[in-house]
Length: 280
Image (cartoon, rainbow, N blue to C red; front, side, top):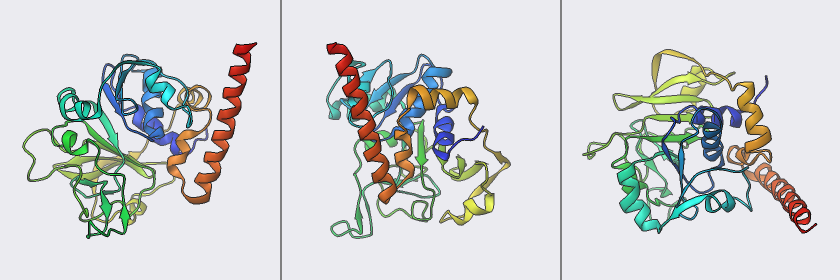
């Protein structure tokens, strides 16, 4: 059965989830959200969402959207609290599994979401910022990453700024990252160094190395990534993300803009239809 790279990434994320885990959800991370929901719908029905939207603890889920994304988190929240309390007091204690999307990452799993460029005052690119990453990454044992577009821009010898701690000499508790999935393959960290464990269909080990700005370790049993199952694809396409919101993270420029407009149009039409039926 044919599948897209965003579907492969979603399924890889889903398969990292264990039943009963607390799963931290960031903002504007539809690939991760789709993976979490797929896990709950298949093998991890007791997983709980800790959502950055509204800073809530959530059970249950609904189809992904853009304009209506808050409905999933806030509509299913059983508890909400302030961001500072969540980042400083709660997350370091409960240590949820979380997938971060780094702008830069080095071989040891240190990562940067602050800025690109050596001058903080005048960077080449200002990034979204750290959020609660510095509070969580220094203590977590379950840090995971995802990168929708694997390139030497993201995988660098040395990060420009340190917002998240990997296998760093200053670490005193927790561990560095344990897992990464990109549009090219899956990785772990062996003795503190990033290691390729599987390559996606149609990708070679040599191509992945060329797209990486440092020398990769290669697992002895490196192999092709297990493809999505038919049942996983059906759930993803028909129930979890029929609008294709997850694909936005794999696109840029005009392609991303055009898809976003199409999603908003279809989302508005669906909302209008539901509202009309309720009034009727």
